[in-house]
Length: 590
Image (tube, rainbow, N blue to C red; front, side, top):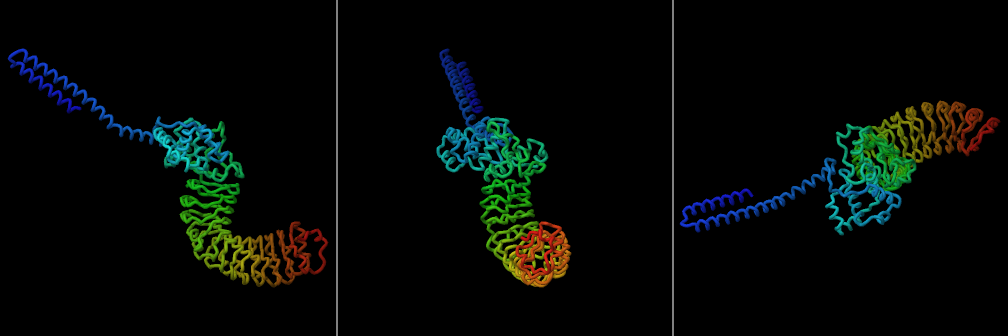
């Protein structure tokens, strides 16, 4: 514009100047008027050219500024979505409407329940809002984008053919979107992840709670809806809050309302879930594993099915996982080995499938493990020698798991073991003398195996042992006198073996014994030692189907001190000498 204006003015000035000079030299006035007229015409022409130049420049400048304006608008939208600004170009949606949709979905469980009262345009708006809901920005979208999608039949078909509004995920979204009573329209609260600066505010800062805990809120709600939360066994009303006028209260966040089974940290993050024996039914949604600050999960004794999602590998803070007694199936995800902090791992009595080759390979890479429960799974082989890698292991529960073969020596290198449970397997061979190395053992359970040989004398080194059960094996030989050193024993169960010889008098040293089961050892002979009367805590005594004999005088002294003593139904097989004391007639022989 500047160039054109300058050129035009320069030209006009030149023409006028030349005209004036020519007029000065003109021979007559007619020539002067002619030149003057031409000069004025040129000035008018220059003015017209200048006007068009200005208009053209304005149009060009306007067109050139359009991309910049669009970018600015987009940036403003982004700022609005991230809480840094505001945008007026947002589709408003009444939260009461979202709440009404939630109620229809929650009560009826399918999409047809709410679509009957929505217009086609509002329906596509709602669906698009839910599709744009994520954990890093608001659900708000621009009106221009919405207008394009509403009038695009292909987009609409894609929305409804591949999108279920009443899914557990969308029920959680609808609940969150209708739970903020500040406004009745979008934009919605931010769902951005936590930042380091958030933590400084703590749980008492409401802005912090709204900002960085909505991820936990969302994840727990998806779990609730995916596992039929309305039928859970314990009170869970606070999980959905008090929905007045179809709009949920704002205090429904798990760390503000003390949700059942949920424990939060001082910074308002969910760190523990305890929903064991609570009638959960359904599958574990992948969204549940967005709770990356969890350190403990207890979902045992429920009706969960499906697989454990591989996303569990992202829960790096997890120290305890208990999903026992569920109907979970499928392969154990290898991502489990990423849980380097895991100390308690219980997946027993489920239908989870361990690998056919090296079934425990993934688990044995958890160096901090202290509790391992794989009861009822398909080990179908011997205990791997790599079990020795679990140096900190205190509880090994591997009953009814198809364990075969003899004890590998590495088991007895686990010197921190408190409980060794290997019932209902097919373990063969004798009890190794290395068992004496397990000096911290409290419970030793080897019921219904194929053990042979005799009791090793090293058993007497297990001075902390409280429960020892070898029922239904093929162990032979006699009790060794050192049995009396196990003074902490509460239960001694050797039913249905091939023991022989007499009952040593040292049995009377087991003064903490509450249950003594010896029946079915048909080669046991001799008299019942009178020291049995020292067992003042005895409640269960089974001596049936043995050849033990003797007077009941001392035995009745024990019976008189406790009316709950139970002798086996085979007690008639005992060969007692002398008459039964009159005081024992009141005892019920069962």
